[in-house]
Length: 169
Image (cartoon, rainbow, N blue to C red; front, side, top):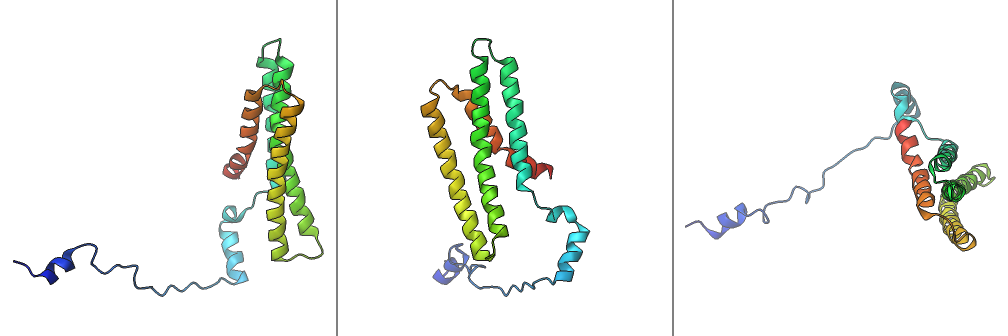
């Protein structure tokens, strides 16, 4: 018969956990010359996305979907489908443009600090969410005959432009 000590040492819950003892990980910060060498070695990894390219792609996508709704919609409600698609695109790209404008103002500000830029990002995102909600409410109240399927499809696809531009970079 095995002893209690032998049984406990073989039990998986009583074994020493490898996470209990912290390892000494040393991370050395790179110098400017080393970072420049990394950027030159693989510049695609360090390429940033211009936000105005995303907004431009959202506008182009809105125009494409609006045109498709015009040509493939039934003749009696063609204009309302097209209008609804344009409204969905507007609700998608206008708040994004407001957010980018807020960031541009923060970049050009005389008081440019990391905390100030972070404040601009947070307030810009709040402005973006508020504008989106207000646009949805305003168009729903002012235009009760909107067609919600083309509106929401266009809105959803304009939001996916962020992913498409990121993948294509």
